[in-house]
Structure formats: C-alpha cells, structure tokens
Image (cartoon, rainbow over all chains, first blue to last red; front, side, top):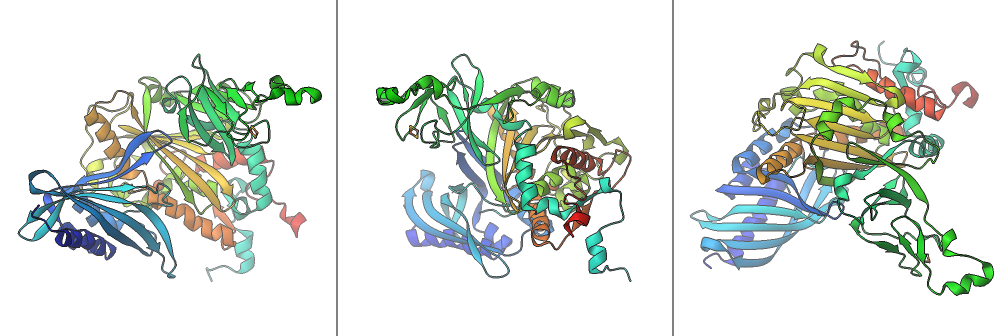
Length: 152
Length: 400
Ligand code: FES
Ligand SMILES: [Fe+2]
C-alpha cells in the first residue's frame, strides 16, 4: 500500500473542513475526476437500503453551485470525522472507513446533533496527494429535521 | 400610514371568513385535542403501502396521532390492524418497525395473539379460573382497515363511512397512475418539524409558494400555462391539482426527463397532486411518486413521514432513474423538502409565539394558476368537522 495513513486521513479531514467552510471549489479539488458521491441509509420500516443522494463529480459540482440560490436555515454544519480503518483496495486504491458526527450550530450559537454515521471512502494516489474516487456517507441518523441542501 | 396598530393586527384582514384562518388553529391546546378526536380519530388515515407488507404474516407498526398501531397480513392475505397494546397489563406488544410474525407474543407475560387479533395463549391460564377470565375475552382491539390503489388506510372510528364512500370518485385521476402496475415503496423517512401539522399541509396545497423554490421558478412556473392548471375540489376536504407541467432542464445540472419509463397515465413532464384530507398528500411527477403524511405531536410539533414509490419489477436502471428523480426534489437532501420544512417551521415560530394572528387564503384565480381555493376547501372541511370556524375558532366576543 503506497498510500500512508496520515496522508489519507488528511484528505478525509480536508473534505470536512472545506465543506464546513462552504469552500465548494476547494472541496471538489479533493475528488478524482471519476468520483462518485452517495448518501445512503437503511430503513428498518421498509427493510431496504436507500439512496438519498447520488452524484458524479459534475453532478455534485452543479448541486453545490446552486446551493446559494436555495432558501436555507441559517447557521452552519460542523463535520467531525475520525479515520477508523485504512485498508488496501483494488488497483492501488485504499478503502477508508471513518466515523462521522455532524452538528448544526444556529446563528444564536446553540449547537445540536444533526447526524451520525460513517464515511466509506475509496482514495487513489495522485501527484497532488490522495484523492477520493468514491464517498458513501452512510447515515445511522434518519430523523434529520428539515434536512439539508449540503452533502454530508 | 400603512403599517398596522395592535388592534388592527389582531382584527386581521378585511376578508370574508372563508378567506382567512385564525392563528389559534395552530396554537390552541384545546383545539389541538379536539383535532385528535374529530379529525384523526374519525377520518381514514394512511397506514402503509401494500408493498410494505407483501408476504403473508408481514407486519408494520405505525401511529395515528400518537396511538401505536400494528398492521399485518393474515394467513389468507387479509390485512388487519390492531391497537398495539396488550390486553393484559397494557404493554406495547410489537416494537419492531416491520417484520414477519405468525403470532404476536407480548414480551411481558407472554400472552400471544394471532394475526386475526385473537388471544391464543395465556401462560398458566388456570390461575384465572376463579375469576372466570378467558382467552376469548382478551382479543386485541381491531381497527377498521380498507385499501385503495395499493394504499392501506385505517379508521379509529368503528362507525365511520367506508373508505370507498370517503373518497367517492375523487381519486379517479390517479387510477391509471396507481392502479395499473403494482407500485413499490423505495424511500421512507420520518422527520420532526417544529410547526403545527397544518403548516406542512399548507406547503402542499399552496401552489403560490412556487416562488420560494428556485427549482420551481426555473422548471415549473413558466413550463405550462397558468390557465391550464386545474383544481378539483371534492367533498370531505379532498382535492386534486392537475395540468401542471415542468421543464426539468431549466435548473442547472438537471437534464430534461424525456424518458420512456414514466408511470402509467403520465407524461414525463406532468405534475399531479392529491390531498387526502386531512393529512396525507400524493404527488406524482412523471416518473415517480411521493406520498407524505404529517402527524401531530403537539400544537407546535409534528412528525412527517415521506414515502417514495416506483414500479414493482423496475429494471435496475429504471429504479435508479426514479430514485434520482425523487431525490432531486424530495427526501432529507432534496432541493425542495428542506425548503418546505423551513417554511412550515417559520410559520411555526409566528403562530407558537402569537406574533402572527391570522393568515389569509384569499387568492382567487377562478380555479386555475395559483388559486387558494384548495386551501379554502381544506379549511371548510376542517371547520365542519371541528364545529368551529377556522377564521374564528374560539368565539372572540365570548372570550373577551
Ligand atoms: S402485559 Fe402483555 S402479557 Fe402481560
Ligand atoms: Fe414546496
């Protein structure tokens, strides 16, 4: 495995930081061109895996570009990730599992838990450092209040 | 001076009673309790879609206005619903959201019930011999259950009119869409909204709020002619919206939806809405259906249940297409649902605090465009069932 834990973790953490700051261009730089993004969850009510968001890199870029035109709850999301495992994948990639917690802070400064879950990522080594080719943000939390226009 | 004094704000707009709604219907505790009794306790309520309990002995638990219920498919396929409470000491019996069970055995003292609601086992039953209590007297409370177009409804009122008569022919426009091929639920989500349940319903009925959604400003408002939109108002408060079109390519990143695999009876660019009074809404967009149900928790709090439906037996590609079309607007990460939920919550703030005293439902476009007639139809039925006019639900001259 040519990708080192530290470099991989740094890329994962940068996705959180840049998305927290709504630095969408910086966020997209962390993805390889063939990137695919999902938000998924399991429903025990209908006993099915569900896909709540699915986009390739261009689709995600368009979604983010549109975000400022939407009516959104004020405040900010804060994504906390901890890399749990880094394992060799196919063709020199690594599979990375991180635990995540996302909190929402309103303009008055009160924070409450928005969601918990895991990132299931695949990263590839590039000249610019490790880049994601896949991210599945799999949520444990399904009750998300009014929801969000942003990825997790 | 164009702003208003406290007295003028309190008095509300100078409109006919049918065209305004008092803020008290969103905040008053007595009205809230009466809604549970007169609306949720007496109208047909959506339990689930038949595809959620496809096999014999499949069950789903759910709630109507906070009351736990369990719906299950019996040995011969008959769907029945019971209050999810044990005849013995009252414990909630079934705790899984779904599953498959030939009998429901209460975890507490192991009393068992079959899928017809009969109590079939009481451990050490002879202990009751001196008092004469028998299994036969300990069945579950059955709740009336009837289906239409694959939707399973329950009614807590044993004397309510049949489901067929409750709808009349109001659902006719949805018969080709929901009654041709078998549908299947692929999305289910519950979320809590800090608003009165009716503020959510209003986001479904008030088509004038297209202006809030950038998606609808770009894809819907000018996709068809306003005069071609039709509102069908029915008895019992039900209503349909038809004739609305969308050009999906208008929103950056979305393509047009000229796909072959539409739902039966729909053009890819059709939008149809049907309000099931009082608290469920069906929305069909060419390729995919959303059904949402809002349940009250308290005057200022409600739980929203959303389902997404495609066709049973969809190819993987068609299912993925429906999921993507669904998620474009709907689900917790859709472009529209978080906006509608935000709107409901912002109305929630105003009515909870008493900042707003009234709202008006006064748009009149002769049953087309962005008419409020569908909201007036809703509140007319609300007023009839509640025995209180929504415009002045607590007789103000009496209260003062
Ligand atoms: S409460 Fe259910 S068996 Fe006793
Ligand atoms: Fe809306």
